[in-house]
Length: 99
Image (cartoon, rainbow, N blue to C red; front, side, top):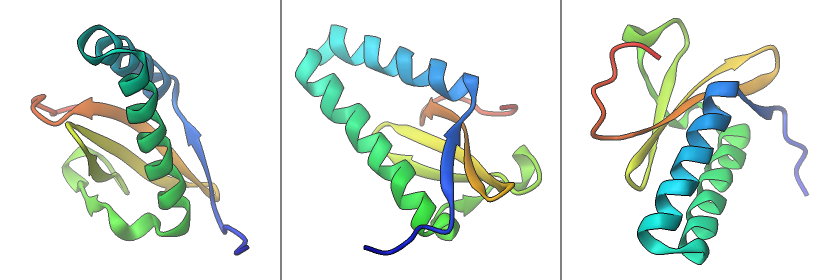
C-alpha cells in the first residue's frame, strides 16, 4: 500500500454541507442512496490526497482554491499545511461568488 503524502481535513462549513446533502438525499431518494452518495464523495476526498492537482484552479475564489465535480456537487478545496483542506461541497447549479 502506498503512503499518502497528504491527509484531508473538512472545514466546519464542509461538514455542514455534507449534513445538508445527506438530509436532502434521504428525503429525495432514501437512506441507501444517501449513504452511497456520501461514500462516493468521501472517496473523492481520498483521491485528492493522492492527486491534489486533479481539480481545476479557481483563483477567483481565493489563493490556491481548486474545484472538483462529483455528481450534482462541486468540492472546493486547497492544499494547506500538509493536508487537503475541504472548504465546501456545494451544488453545481449554485451561483458561487464567495466561499
